Amino acid sequence: MATRASIIADLKAHIEQVAPMRPPPKANPTGITALDAHIGGWPQPGIALVYGPVGSGRFSLVLPALQEATHSAQTVAVVDPIGWLHPPGLPGINLKHLMLIRCGAYQANWAATQLASSGAIPIVILLDPPPLSNGAARLNRATEVGQSTVIVLGERPDPRLTPHIRLLCLGKNTVQIQRGAINQPTIHIA
Image (cartoon, rainbow, N blue to C red; front, top):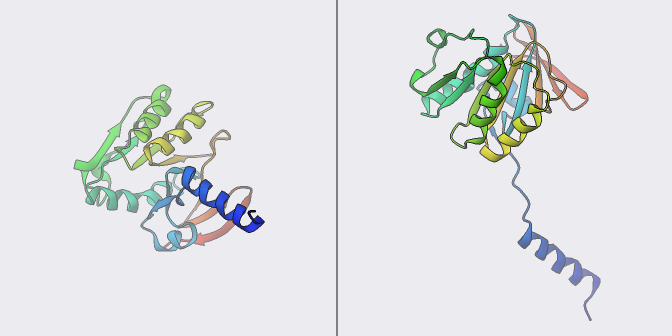
């Protein structure tokens, strides 16, 4: 007769065989040491939200990761629905590995979703998107399918978006980290 301990061991072995635990998500380094120390990098797969007023330094948080990825010959996509990004003005970016999509506000979420789910683009930046509404869930699933990181940059958080991490840019190289309902520390990232 089997003992309780042997039954539990058999069940654990069976579960491990038919449904192995998923490994913890990887992370793409942000390229900012102080920020990596607190958040561990950009979630991969996953969504990160970087928001704050214009001029608060939102893009400066993603620039080091873009520099690293493009110099490692990884293609990075930037979906720019309002057409404000000027790639030659980005310092340290290898433009051969930067894909710029200017599709207008109506198709921005669709474009980001297609890129994220492709499996070919490790980092997708979505600049100042319109409200995502039902597309937020599709975008989240797309990161899982394509094992990609989507970083949404905007002036305010989208209530339908469920990012793994939220970073509120307060200006002067100051960022407040937000996870779930609890605000994490405010850090200076000089």
